[in-house]
Image (tube, rainbow, N blue to C red; front, side):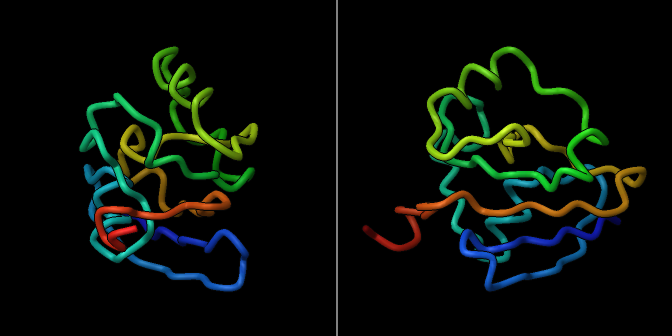
Length: 113
């Protein structure tokens, strides 16, 4: 299991969940109602699942592929520790992971806006 902490864009809300190894972060986030759209359903064809990984966790993840880096160039509010949630697969070795939603994150499929 991996303990994932989701932090809202404004930093006021935190939600901690446990997820089994092998799950994609995007799927975990959507299952608990986090505002990640994932328009391409994890096919790495958009950047609507952009998250900001905590600096202390970022280097413990496998590096982003060139394709993921290219898609992050299209995302708003990208930081040095930005990743696409569809490309983060949780592992036992990871143990914990903290991610923050970027400013203006929303799920238009869920909110209808």
